[in-house]
Image (cartoon, rainbow over all chains, first blue to last red; front, side, top):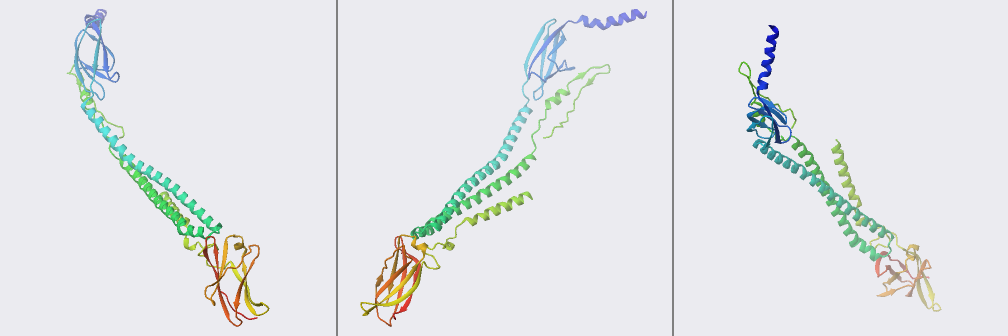
Length: 239
Length: 140
């Protein structure tokens, strides 16, 4: 009695399987990786090939940053069918990309301008130091000439025009140097301040609402009516 | 703290730059400078009155000592102006090998005082501030 019951049970388990013939569906989806799909509103899968019973099947296909595409495919028994599909980017993702590009451009400019100003100040200071050194060297030569020269005319020219001109050059170079150093200091201060400021700016975050929608689409039927699969996403990444 | 130190160093560097200027007012250490204020290249050794032309006339002899620093310069002129007879200018012969120049005034009267302006010109006739103004009574 027991043996006959067991045989009946085993036969009942294999009966539906043997009755339905299956076909293979090959998923050729853009993006080529990291996509998921739900077959017939029930089974969530993440693979490139799936064996299904012959007949019409509904697919909801989704990938991160893309929209959910719903389609139906007829699977033919004992044959491999290709499903070729490109998932378009979601409007939220396009908007996020735009906001991110704006954020990065703005941040780059705000950080680059004071750095360029500081670099300009450094170049300005460098040129001024060169000019200052040249004027100082000329004055040192004038001083040496004054000590060794015995021609009063030359000495008068030195004191009357040459040295005042070189003094003026030195003063001009010094003023320029002070300007260059001040500009560099302001540039450095602005760089420090703006780096700190921009580091506190909030980076745009991508809220993938398509994912939320997709996560809530799986329905697992059960004896008491089934289970609706819902997903909760917590973004733990630091901006 | 570090930024304060850098700021102070920058200030010190900028202030230090001021020392490189040449102060023209204090530039007067060359004795060939027309603005020279100090000891002259020339020094009166002696002023004597001596007879000549068998004692009928007298002349005054000023012995002028020249510093070696001046004698190393080739191109200089000593000019002597005597004021008793207007516009009497004497250009004494200068031998660079000799440290002394003798200035001769042939027209002196015994008992009279004679004053001289002795100045020094170098190069293109630029007057140096090395003037001497001696006075002496012609007496034997």
